[in-house]
Length: 236
Image (tube, helix red, strand yellow):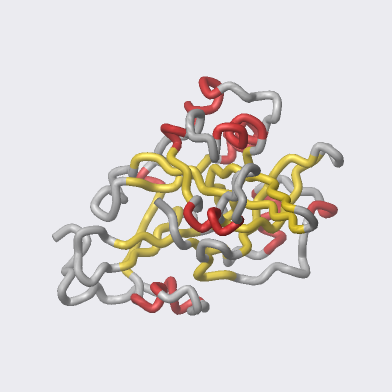
């Protein structure tokens, strides 16, 4: 799964990584984030049908289905299992028609089955921006309108399996255009993209439990920390 992530990369570097035109940028709202939590604002890349190019937009993290009576339901839909996207009423239409790239440069996971749980920070070895496979939805009741999103997950790779059995789908740049292509709507055209990212291209290290609080922010959250004494090492 994915319940916290980071986006500390400068905006210009993100623009280059996602092939964004200058007119598609949102500079005023951009700041380094080290502890992005559910229901907060995240930045996503999606196709703009009106402008004919990719756009970078802020969305609410936690997908709110169009048919929902209460937008609070989004807090329970921060992740979507890749294996059931085509079946679940909350996700199947978005899977066909409203896919996006959720911009990140790292994420946190807590080792399951340990007390207290040791948090780890995971990122690519090249330590640059990357894309979670995402779905987005537009919800509106009266004058209240919310665009929201969810992160697609899959089976964990070998690196993350000691922590959790799930991980977010990280798309390589070669798959960005295909995932965003609005002409592709059949599950058999899209599900091959929803696989575990290669473990050898990723790295992780233990971090402080300060990240447990969504109110905490700052670069100290991703700094390497000594593993908890009761926990031992990742591979004990």
